[in-house]
View 1 (tube, one colour):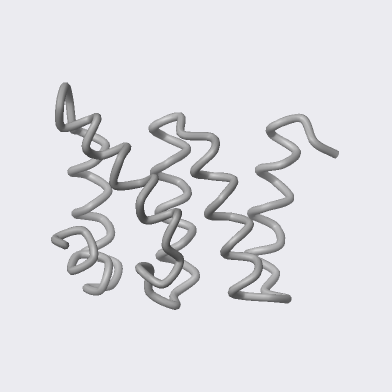
View 2 (cartoon, helix red, strand yellow):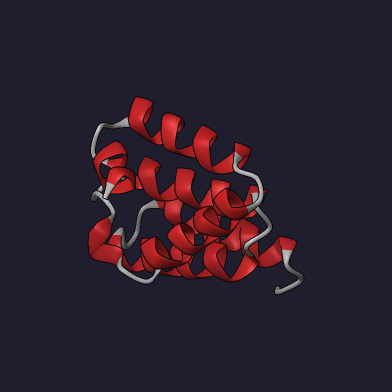
Length: 100
């Protein structure tokens, strides 16, 4: 619930959430990963803001959650069809993963 509130606060909220999740250790790190998996499984939980999606995908990448990154970027591209940033982010990720 707190994560959704922070996501709704715009850039500052996303930055606060990202910093909290990235610095989590032990049980907190497990909870951070569960939160990422949960958010990526519920596209309606995220604001309709491309930067929010990119930020969350970047956080998942930093936490080495490849499955979450891929899921978020695919969903993002479907939600923002034709947006060059969404297309480029997915293409860059796929290339980084070895897909051509």
